Length: 184
Image: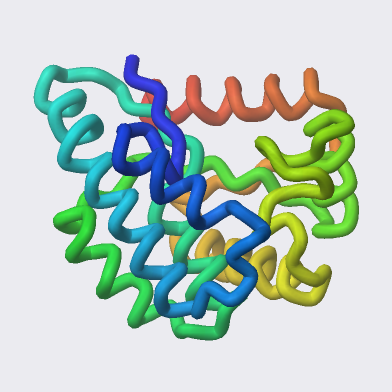
């Protein structure tokens, strides 16, 4: 099994991640943000994901194209079709077999993220990273984007209610993955 994260997961991807999440870059244009996420993803696909799949590994990725569709396509209002086109180029059309969407009200999710990050907040920035500092309205649009994607592809994108306890969410994810592996 290969575990990866986005953006990041490679030396180049981690440098792009630092740029994307740094709250000091609040002037980052939406198209630039989209292209940087796609660039980090392209590097990850070429360097890690495709080689792992070629060896028969299962790849578990924290985020992927659906995140860009929701964040940049809907949240930043660039449009899902343009974001999908850019990412199809970056990934060579590689689509996950299963996506688990953890759904939660944005206010609750942001509060949990800030609380769980500890006193420093975010990865290294007090008060959260650049995306966590976005308005609640932005995060509501992102959530609606994710839910729309899930509604359009219910066999691939499975929604888990993330309001439950960590243990219950873990169990729900485990049950979904186990069922998927059994062909359910």
